Length: 407
Image (cartoon, rainbow, N blue to C red; front, side, top):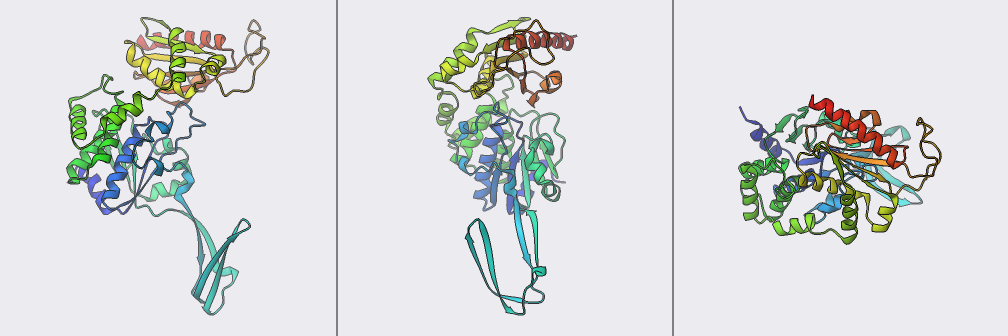
């Protein structure tokens, strides 16, 4: 009987048109793995496309895809979930045959001109349909369940049910929805799993570009080997990828040496206002609307600031940044809805909160009272409160929750 790795390899070998996709609620490591795998599949003469439905406007805390723009084939990534669909026009030729087909585009329309060889066509001979494109295999990366694919799955549900799926992940809680499920919880990144597949079952397929993509995934996921889950296997694979041509220096330059002065100014303001309780178990900082305007920095910097804080300060379980959205053009006035009368009536920007946890804490559950959006480790909360009121209320709430968790 074939093991899971062998089944993955066999399915890939038998397939011709392959779609690689990933959950929109996981981190960017899936981008590196998808690009590396797509390069390998193309080298195997497979038709392959990558579809990752990250929506930066709705999920700003997803790191911008642009951080990976230096990787090969990055520009080929599709983001539109509707791109899987085809509009099909069918013509019944049982009563008449076709001699010529022409089409013309113009004035917002597409017209087909069909000349019959014999017989005639009527409008009853025409039918239309919508179907998914001709992929015969789907490979999902870092995807806990199909619902987490968002609109990619919602719009193309029939396609996902009718097409074999290889489900590759290293996260607990995976629902094993694939025809083959390759879940390796002991690896530091999904790109390690991809390396093992390509290295063992596809001889000499890993070239310089593929190595660079896979190496980028390991470096990104381990914060350049600063996280606590580094394993000997991860280091061995890293060494092997570098020896195969992985461009280590290029990766570091793009991930960690490309911060501009505006970003560093914003970092400085976060650090200057950093507070903590319970031996830094809970940390928080604040940023005003003015802070973003004066530094000319983006709120998209916040997830990376949270990452660095978690790595730099031990014993931390939850980090929160309270801020006034620099893109918010609406100033609230009067007492916030459902709040007490002793609160300020001075106009203010409603507070936003971004919260990160590196521990085994599901923030969506922990803070469900505040209707957070995001995923288990990184959420956003939108409030109608002034920032100081939001800070006081949410910090007290988090302290109580952490005390309950420690009981």
